[in-house]
Length: 523
Ligand code: KIV
Ligand code: ZN
Image (cartoon, rainbow, N blue to C red; front, side):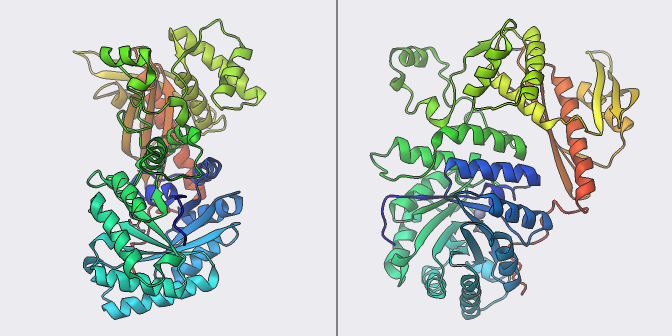
């Protein structure tokens, strides 16, 4: 492969990211994220692990059928059944890819109990099988960074000879460091016959906080595909963050003269959607997409930025699609102004959606002095997650709490249209309100996550609340935004229960829990 300066972006938010415990997305959410990734210019979307569950299979198949530009890839272990299932899922894509892997380090080799020679034979057979199905095959030696160099070269060589077109070098446990990451790619390029005919990919985990640096170092040594996720979502400390590597190569193009196909102005929107649907909020000081990434709070910084923005800003907020945090409108603003503002924010609304948003915007403007872009986006998001046909609807909530009384919640829910009320106490207002919901609608859902964050600054800010519950291996998340944190909490909880009810109708118990292990080599 000629090593020109084009770096392919391989996004694995929907596979390695979604695998992160609790980050499970629904089928529709996966389709939506895949569409946004495709529109943003991601070259390859790893859409899932088709053998892992029926849900994964269907998501990969449907994403493959819809993708317009991106190559759609599925993951498969080194066995014929996995590879056949993967091909079944991706084969209708305009550009399909099979990604098959096996753990090559001493620790990983011990699990399938294969000798080194037997593993080489397995690699040859499985890559050959994949290549007979699909002319775009990626092979990964899992835990490559802890694999003996001689053995790594031998396995990569056999995979190339068997027809792999991309060789991915995973730092599975986030163990390597930049210099070593670069040296490993350079070593493979130098020693492996045929290495110049394929693309090397780098796949880094962030356990030591070096995933971005390691990926960029690998590119400098000749890798031309970066595997990454939006917001760095992924198991443990996550994967290389797409927004970090893409913006690093753009901002420091003087020393990293590489280009990608990514339309960076779509980054912020994707980051927000992935945070919402995965239930993993972005830390405030996260590079590129954190809430504080473009804030200049300290006096010295503000002064500098006002005189010349480049004093403290190395990139512009617009580069990642972030609009300046302007006060949008007050309570006297009209429908036309709201429509044009939403257009500017990239949100196209049908007339009925605009009418609904307008009513909610007016109600918010009555309670909140200043309505910001983020407030409007939170309202839109909220409207997207709550459906008129939901089984449970919050009708009324009144909560009392104090230093010397137990918190008490008076709650009325409409359950399939019929109103039911109860008053219950709890350890604090949220606990009291959640107890009341559970008493009115008993369910087996365990509360796995309850997270509150403020949309903007100030004590009158809207709170967005994310709730995740699980029941018999089914996982459901709910979100809501409101200026009253307790109301937002109950609406998010009710929303999660509604999603759980939908999942009960559609899936068998245990469907959301990945049933397979990465080390299972079963044929
Ligand atoms: O981290 C890893 O090794 C992986 C492989 C399955 C490619 O995600
Ligand atoms: Zn990984």
